Image (cartoon, rainbow, N blue to C red; front, side, top):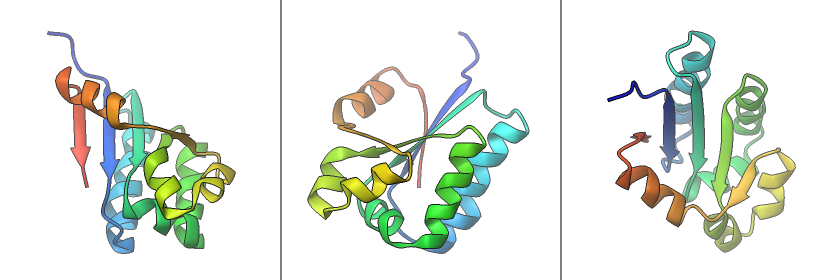
Length: 114
């Protein structure tokens, strides 16, 4: 089996301290230190609202994107929470993630859920 080189991090916990001390610390450092070749951070659920409203979280998202983390958000979540435009304005990809997440799981890709 080939070595897995792409990490998907599904971020559903809207705790700001967890975002700072785990989500962004790990995703960014994973690329800086070469632990993973590619990192995709998926914003899902309550984290979409947090990202749309919190300036410090927005700065962390922008920094992660600048450092190479692919950041994407669940479109159904952003629509239901009324924050799609705010999330897009950060440069975050917004798409329906139900099918792609199912494929990540079925293909046994590396997924970390926070």
